[in-house]
Length: 400
Ligand code: UDP
Image (cartoon, rainbow, N blue to C red; front, side, top):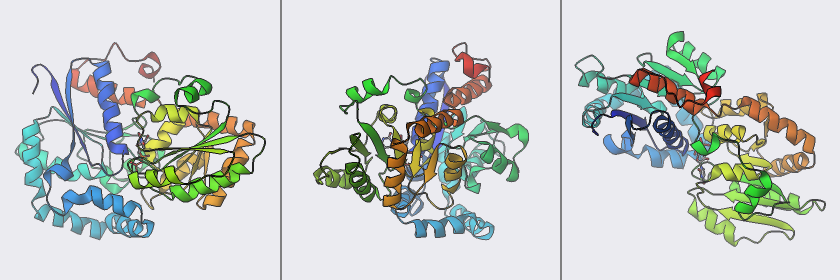
């Protein structure tokens, strides 16, 4: 423990890229609003401190995220109350709670911030054991799903549960949380998304893109999942038929190195520029440079695109977990869901040919976004822990 600092422990699991990205965003906001006050650490507690097979859930997620049918089965199993309860008993019988208790004792936090559905129930029980029945420090949940959420997100024992949307506020209330426990703020996104971007043309220059080409960004979450190869093929073929305006397609493969290597070697139709990247750290610039985004329905990517005013086509979603994200986008009027690559390509091209429609969707995206959510959550937490409001809170957020 650093002397004089309050210790904040973020609990996540690295299933996908979104939970860690949101935790990092919140950590950055806490440091910015309360300089020198906090000592933060981010812990994937299941991978580091549970036991086999539970410590392999990250690999399991990567495998299942590519198989929607298997995912649907697992989701149904895990939300159905009797099987959910049976699994919880099984995990407890495997001695996970005492392991978590030791991990939490070592970390000795002044506050725990949970940012994953699997880091409520057992860590809360472990903290209660640690304090001999009374929790030794406050515990808050920051929900990082957008339109629908697994029941595990909502535990009545938490001090505060931050939710990103009205749909999830209602879900939290249905799961028995009191009104005073639930705060609607938004989904934490990284600092590069908090400010307005520089212009499209400058950003394209800086990224080595053609400044005057229509630009389509294709992303598949942190792990580069979803039929990205087939989607880019269909987009490139459709773009080749558009003689009037040249098109460039930027593909971000995330940590999917095999896909990145394969796409970099693939020949593309004449007249279409295809730029392939692996994991990029400056996603906010790529989004600022694009006219349209094609992505799976990951909550982090959707919240980021919304903050950038970027219309999007959702190409797939994980049954259950991401289904509500599709409604969040379509009801918000800033995107559509298309599954077949040919349908994705024709929707994208029709939007590119209708600048007014793109402009309207872009305004809707901005209207649905909450770019200052990260500051607001950090401010609430800071006020609770430090006992004073931050003078550094941006004015627009402070007044909300
Ligand atoms: N991301 C990134 N660089 C990449 C690919 C993805 O920074 O090359 C980020 C993306 O901007 C988002 C997160 O990874 O913040 C993905 O989160 P999301 O909730 O969309 O999907 P997940 O990967 O968690 O399923």
